[in-house]
Amino acid sequence: MAVVVSVNYRLAPEHRYPAQYDDGFDVLKFLDEEQSKGILPGNADVSRCFLAGDSAGANLAHNVAKRASEASFRELKVIGLVAIQPFFGGVNRTASETRLVKVDPLVSVDLTDWMWKAFLPATGEGMVDRDHEVVNVSGPRAVDISKLDFPATMVVVAGFDPLQDWQRRYYEWLKRSGKETYLLEYPNMIHAFYLFPQLPESLQMIQQVKDFILKQCSKC
Image: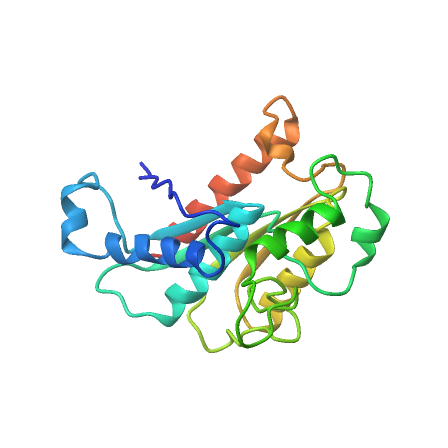
C-alpha cells in the first residue's frame, strides 16, 4: 500500500522562484525528521520515495528531485520521478511550439511566455530569461547531474502538446547524463489528457505509472 503526500506550495506571481521549490524540498526534509513519524501511517517507508507531478508540477518534481540528490538525509531516499508532460521552456521556439501554436486548447506560446514571466524573478542579478536552469533544464545553463544520485525517471509526452520538444530534450539529456529514464509517448493526445478518465489513454498511463513504481520498488 502506498502513502501519498499531496504537497501545497506558494504560487506565482505573488511568490516567485524559488518559493515553490523551497516548499517542495521542505516537505522532503520534514518527512525525513523524527516528528513526521507521528503523522505518517506506520507502514510509510521514506527510504522508497517517489516524486510525481504533471505539467508545472512535473517541473517542480524534477527540480526538487535535483535538490534531493544533492542533499543528505537520515532515512529518506527518492528512488523514482514521474514527470508527466513536464512544463519546460526556453528562449528559442521549438518546432512543436510553432507547429501546434493554436492546436492545444490548454497550452499556447503566449500563455507559457506569460507564466514564465510571472514565475521568474522580476529583478536581481544573473540570467533570468527562459533559458534559466529551472526552465530550460537541458539547455545551455543546465546543471550537470551526471555525478548526482538522480532517481530513475519516467517522462510522458503527448503528440499534440506544444511542449513536447522540450520534454523529449529532457529525456535525451537524462540519458546523456547516464540516468535511468523511460519515455512514454501518446501521439494523439493533448496537454493534460489524463484529466479525462473516459479516454483509454488516461487509464493506460495510470497503469504505466503503477508499473514504473513497482519496477523501481522491486530493486530495493
